[in-house]
Image 1 (tube, one colour):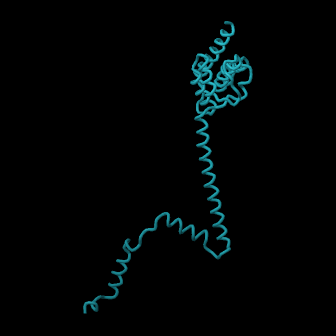
Image 2 (cartoon, one colour):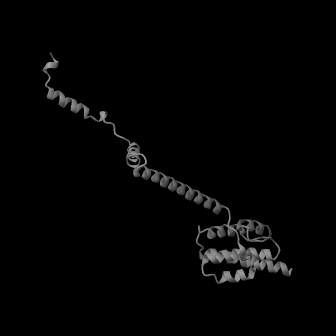
Image 3 (cartoon, rainbow, N blue to C red):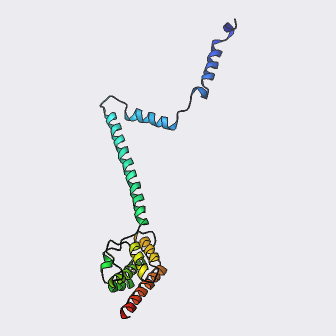
Length: 196
């Protein structure tokens, strides 16, 4: 009896209102929507059709881009590790210490002057036979050798050399003056030892 007294249109509206509630329509996650879009747009169509090739090409492009990003990140970390070590002195150290000192005094930029003054000081110690360096010797290695045989803060000079050589620091006039003083003191000290 009770069921017969319900109006069908009222039952229809009640059922529609109940089914319209959000608990019956869970929201699709962003990832699910993206995956569904990918599958619908890239791989729909008949097998071997242009859309399936289009999807394959997008996957290949995505893998290539991901590999490129991984390579660039790895390269950046590797470069950072190299900076933490030391810059090689290069073939400049094989040149005359006097010519390096002269070039440093007329250098066009503070960065160039700092690098040349450090190389001149190391080259002077090398020429005097107090240390042995090669173009592949790093500034830090040369500084350790120089610290053992000559006065001056060669370790700080090597740190400045590395920072300037790798572009992490732009040399200031104070840096240039400090490296000039180190080079001049090294030259003076070497001359005094030769005369004694």
